[in-house]
Length: 260
Ligand SMILES: NC(=O)c1ccc[n+]([C@@H]2O[C@H](COP(=O)([O-])OP(=O)(O)OC[C@H]3O[C@@H](n4cnc5c(N)ncnc54)[C@H](OP(=O)(O)O)[C@@H]3O)[C@@H](O)[C@H]2O)c1
Image (tube, rainbow, N blue to C red; front, side):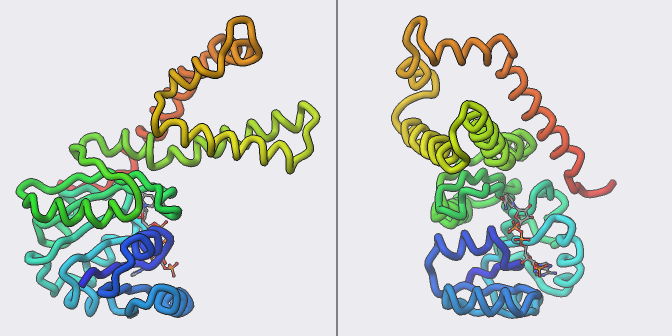
């Protein structure tokens, strides 16, 4: 049995992707429980402890600030023979092992495109996790997109690039729409042209590098080169690096570790 503590957006993406029946979800909101159980034919409860006892794999899918309260609730449950997977941003493996009294801990950072099964999930495991467990966890997250394994020390960078990344790309999309409107397009047209261009360009990246796409679109003395020159003159690459650095720094500040 795979049990989700928290039946919010990320849990729903995983449940949808996994398309299994042996899923159990604990969630305080009655309305949300009703929606989840009716939509995905899974069992739900409002009792985290009952869920933990009945599940072999527990996926913590609550906001980071809720995690410590859940650890207290589960204090009497022996989790050492179960697999605890946390997707809570910034909650370290050492904190999870300490708070939930188990070494069988895997930390995963998925991202929002998981909602359309195009997620990017990065997995870090506690020392000593078996190959079998890692393969199992990878299988769960492969159902909502791509997966890679990285050391936990890289999680702040991961949070900046793939975790917050969708918002940065969406910000760029908004700016393109606004720029299109400033050039005389109506809102709807500027939006359609921008979003279809982003979606189409993303598809190109499945077989081409960003640089080769830039080269394909640019011709000497042409319109693309004129636009790219502004990007270079204003050091847009430096700006993007600063954006990612700020996000990674904030992630490091927010990290929940074991207090020594
Ligand atoms: N969304 C993302 O892009 C993303 C990416 C990477 C990682 N994450 C991580 O994934 C986690 C979940 O994010 P989300 O976007 O799915 O958030 P969410 O939609 O707010 O889901 C959290 C769910 O947990 C429920 N909950 C609150 N207290 C609970 C408790 N004591 N026991 C059981 N369930 C409880 C909430 O119910 P109520 O609404 O009734 O309080 C809500 O349905 C977060 O830690 C986040 O950092 C999210």
